[in-house]
Image (cartoon, rainbow, N blue to C red; front, side, top):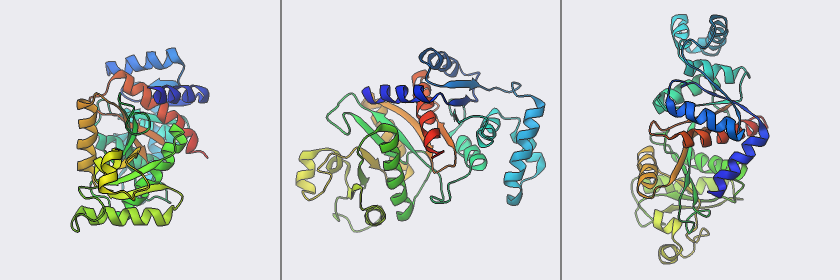
Length: 313
C-alpha cells in the first residue's frame, strides 16, 4: 500500500534508534534483517542477559526515582529490570533510544504497563490509549483503503471526555504521520439519535465535546459504521453529516467494540493492521499483536520512529 511505503520512506530519513526487547522471537529477528536492509531505522535487539549489570543498576535507580512516590519497593524495581521490556522502556525514558516496539510475546497489558510506568503520560491528555493503522485492498473506503481505528487496545470504557480526546489526538496523529486530512466518525449502534440510551448517549456527548474543543476538525457522531463509511447509506441515514459517508478515522465507543472490529477487518478483509500504536505518552512506543508478522514489526518500527520525532516537538 502506498501510504505504508510512505511511512517507511519517512522513517528512513530520520535514522531513529528503536529497541526490540524480544530478540528470541523469530519474527523479530526476521524484521531486524528487513529493517536493516531497507535502512528504515537503527534497531537494537534486547534479550535477557544482553544488558550489563551496571546498566541494569542505572535503569533500576532511575525507575525507583520515578516510582518511589507511588510506594514501589526496591525489590520490585530490581525484579522489573530483569525483564528486557522494562530495560527498553527505561532506555527510552533516559534518552538512550528514541522508542521501543514490543508485543510479539508480551501481552498488551504488559507492554502498556511498562510504557506508562517508565515513559509517563502526557499531562495535557492524562491517560494512555492506542490506535491501529488499517490498510484495506479496497481503495473505495477510507483514505484510498487506509483507516485509523481507536481505541482498540487500552481503554476499556472511556468516558465521553476521554472519547473526545481520543478522537482529537488520533486525528492529529493521522495528519502528522500519514499526511492525510482527518475525517473522524465517532461510532455507535445508533445514528443521530435513533437510540436515546446506553453508549449512544455517551458517543453523542463525546462528539459534541470534540467539536467544541476543536471546531477545525471534520468530525461527526454518533454514527453507525455504514453511515460513516458508505456514502449511499449516509445519504439515507444522515444526509446532513459533513462526513458524507467518507470517514477515514473511526473512534469506537469502548475497547470491546474496537478490538473485535479491528480483528474482524484484519482477518475477513485480509487487511493490514499496524499497531496498536500507544498514544498519550511522553515518549514513543508501539505494541504488537501476538499474532503479528515480521512485516507488521517492520511497519510498527517505522511508525514509532516517526512518532518519536513528533514527541520531541
